[in-house]
Length: 435
Image (cartoon, rainbow, N blue to C red; front, side, top):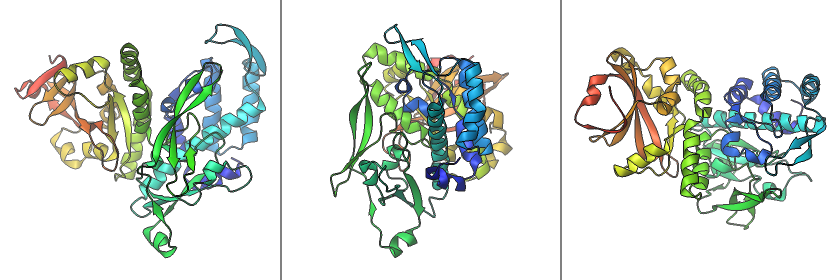
């Protein structure tokens, strides 16, 4: 990694960036704007790369570069021969899926490899940097924007230079660098003593955040929502680039944005969208590495991620039971994961094995039944384990996470249980069957 604007990332353990990168699935797309931030954070993609073998070669080269600390030139030198041999190089004719017509497109080139390298390096280290900062938020509760103040810096990014917000301020949900292609901004952490000693001003973004629309493709006319922060003092507006209104280290906020977009769709299209998200394997692929990191750290830092979406038919069934969720996605946090592995549950035999815990997204996706607990007013996702044993996952509908705006369907806990206990009168069957 020979870019000076990524130098700060070298202070981080590279395995954190590698863990984030390896958690991604694959996604093929003709144009970069076909894979928005809600899947970019969870999937590896390269525009115009419609061949899985070629995409795997590029991903493998990026994985190697992250693991071994390769420079851009080493990355290019190792990958270019493979892409040439596979025929993914230079300008070629491809069929545009939008028009059905063939047109010349740029495949591999030194410049494209540089873009792939820098973008994936920056995003991976950004996610690792965020995790590192959240880990120490008790000691360093204030975060400050730091911009490279030279002639190449965008004025809107420069407007953020030096601004300080609390670590849990909503601005970090959308404006944690990188804010756009080629962004060189970063964030540094400060203690309360440092803020006081230097007489620094701590701001809050409440009331200053909004959304705007940007044209992202003249070819298709597609527009995208981008997050905007308006400085209450100067009136300067700082918007992210299209496709960059997300924090790579905060996956569940991406699903919130995806849901806000889906709500504007016609009912049938929205139904299909929820169904597609419920079938996605991205959360299941990212979850095991996330669990390993939580267990290794051994203490919660308030980090949450999406672990699945409710099926559209389940959302309809819950609505009939007067349990209409604000949104269809399911979220877990690090505190809950540690709770599921605590000693008391281990001794009682109720605790999930590590393999069961890592498979939670698959339980939420492939449940056999969902029950409503009329006493505790929560949902139980149930999977039969064989004999008289089942795995239950408790989900709190419309739960407000500490320090977050909006509500989610929160995965509170999970455990093993004797199946006959699920037949008690306090449970109402919402979906599926208990056999």
